[in-house]
Length: 222
Ligand SMILES: C[S@@+](CC[C@H](N)C(=O)[O-])C[C@H]1O[C@@H](n2cnc3c(N)ncnc32)[C@H](O)[C@@H]1O
Image (tube, rainbow, N blue to C red; front, side):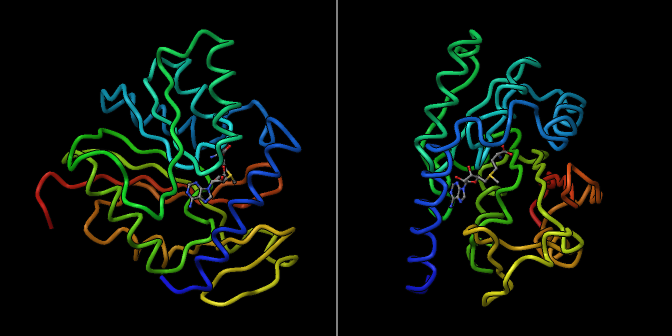
């Protein structure tokens, strides 16, 4: 990883910490559209436990728990995770929700092939170099059981926000102090190598233009 990315990532972690501290429940209490889709897909596959990456203050983790899933939520903002822990306690969902600090640029904690489902709303479009992004998807694949599911959602290159963003290197751009990447179908396809790509759906959420992606880790290694 080059030094520029280490610095950038540290600054982004501080940016997220202060955003959550200044505005608790930053993303609101309504679950994302991707979480609704994840519930359908995980439920249809008979899965009842989910690893969520980049959960923030946990609007989706709480929603998944309300639907009966056990959720292990991770994020690199302790402030956001504290908000999630308190909300889970208030709702009496703390037996179904755990929250742990984790930076997804580090290897995922679970052992190989021990997780049934991974969910990530608006995480993969954060500040990752192309190689960090590939490593993250490879890590998700490593921890998933054969046949395990990965559902994620990202901002699309068709998002109106692209016109207000300033381009940086490596396909990243910055808007309001947040650095991220807009995804197109080619990038989704590239990251889906060695996976079965089940769904790639453009959709609108509020003002955002998004892509919903669902992939399965094949039963046989490819
Ligand atoms: C746009 S927010 C989405 C939060 C949540 N998924 C939601 O939809 O409400 C992106 C989240 O990713 C987290 N994040 C960004 N980079 C991360 C990293 N390297 N490791 C772990 N979490 C990260 C941020 O702290 C933030 O909570």
